Length: 67
Image 1 (cartoon, helix red, strand yellow):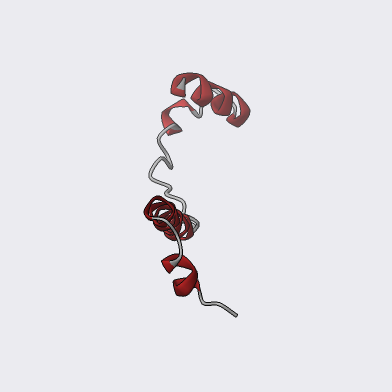
Image 2 (cartoon, one colour):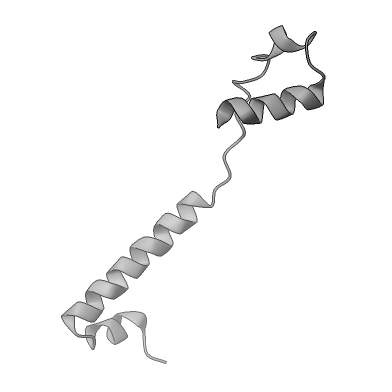
């Protein structure tokens, strides 16, 4: 079985650049797949409205305010 390195050596320069770009893509994709813990920095930001709106109404309002 032929190694990846020996196969790459047989490629033309523009093909080697494509391989290099693809490797970079794979490496970046692997890193970005790591799940980040959710941030709850927004928690409590709408408490001033809790007596005015129900939780469902607040949910709808927050979507309106974001847009």
